[in-house]
Length: 407
Length: 221
Ligand SMILES: Nc1ncnc2c1ncn2[C@@H]1O[C@H](COP(=O)(O)OP(=O)(O)OP(=O)(O)O)[C@@H](O)[C@H]1O
Ligand SMILES: [Mg+2]
Image 1 (cartoon, chains in turn orange, cyan):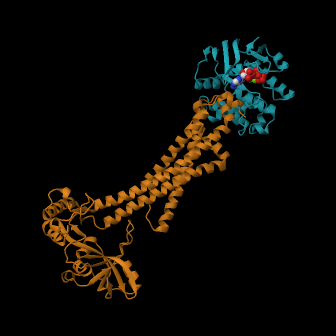
Image 2 (image 1 turned 120 degrees about the vertical axis):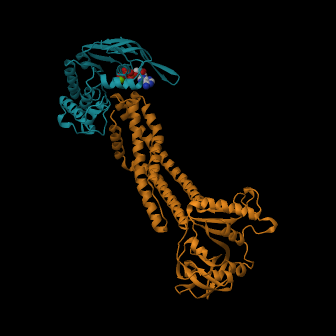
Image 3 (image 1 turned 135 degrees about the horizontal axis):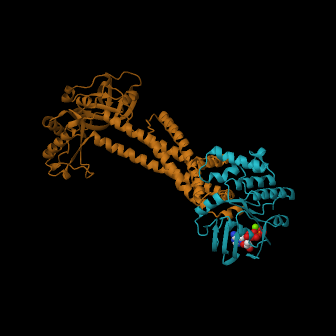
């Protein structure tokens, strides 16, 4: 039998039962569309996370107190805080390739301007923060080294904070209260938007680290939430990380890496962690979408079984004139594959459309990659073969005489 | 000899019971013969014809078609034999109801060795003309009378140029007039050298055949 023939028979049979074929295909359409949309959103999120993290600077290293290995935070010997501003100074002084170090002290604060209230994270930093993160100003200026030395009560606010407190007024020069302490706003940061992990990067307040420690936290400027370190070039980042680790082990009198009371990370590691999370989410949602595709496959099997029964006499006639079991098998298998392939094509189109709408409505980036289309089509095709196999096999096993006698 | 049957037995198993449909049937048919098989209902005529047509396998015995052993062949091999050597004509026509006369006649060619579509079509058209349906080629079976449908079935049986035509009560569903037409057609085919075996209840047809075989209770008398 020629290769195109089963295809022609299949198309004819499907056209004959348009409504039934469409309903059967619908299951595959929904499954494929869901799969495509989920993968598009997931891959879009991954790309956005990576881009955003990389836009923070590929030559940045972060040091956190506590060990990632054990999960809990070790504190240093003699009750010393595990990461201090002095550690930062030492890194700046002793590690070659380090161009800037910025201590970060975080404090949740209530911000008040006149009648307006806002709750935001205030980060105590130094002017090198701006340099490391490459953050420009929308208005005013960043505070100076002198402000850090003198622990002056000045701050720089992000766009979201400005919107919520000032409603159009120019914040520069105004005095806000952070936990009821007056701070003068010296600048407004340029907007960065929402990060892929959902954090609004513009919902932040930056103040001199010394001021945040003394005024907001009520403690001497010593322990920090994080050290942000700028490195000369991306290539030397691994070396710098090693230098920082050995320096901190020496300073903290840690003998083995297992006992580390700090964690040094560069952005590639952070990127990996975050993309791994989003990849995991994508995989999980894809599995759910695949289940709906599987259900669509069961629909195909069901309809093919009905079709074989309905066409028993036709099978008998074809066998009587010389169709072999293989010919009959092929005929029904191709019909099932055509059904699922049709569903896959429409589903891919619908899924891509849905992804487009999701991206438009929620302002998320989506990425309909060729590999995800290929994967969805392949999967739908396999579903067609898998669920079409049994009905086709049954048809091929029928006895011609019994088929011809069938009413 | 075109057909040689040796001690063919066919037993149907219905639940626990064995139904012997053919017992010790031996038969030879020469090339070019026109053979009629008659007998009471249930005597095994259709069973015999189905075995001859390779639609079924005997329970025991040997069947040589044109010198080649066919008992013991696989289903696919039997399909090839049916396709290349045998043309069937059934009492109930057994056409594909949704396809045109032309497509029905082309059907056996589709399952045979590849033939270019125009040649397929040409052969089908030629045969439809020969059975007097040149003006009906695009009609579907529902648009044709019983006699016309049976003529489509005969054209289909001939299209692969078989050695053997098997007809199971070919006029059973037809009025006497169209039945007569069909028989005339068979005679013409026989005159051109085809081997024909027909199962029939009609004495008229049986008389017209060269040789009559009577069956009773699964045996040839
Ligand atoms: N598939 C089957 N299963 C069980 N028994 C069967 C089957 N087919 C035929 N038989 C039995 O085999 C015997 C012969 O049947 P067959 O159809 O060959 O008779 P027939 O001579 O063609 O009769 P008719 O003239 O009515 O067509 C009958 O007794 C019938 O009941
Ligand atoms: Mg019969």
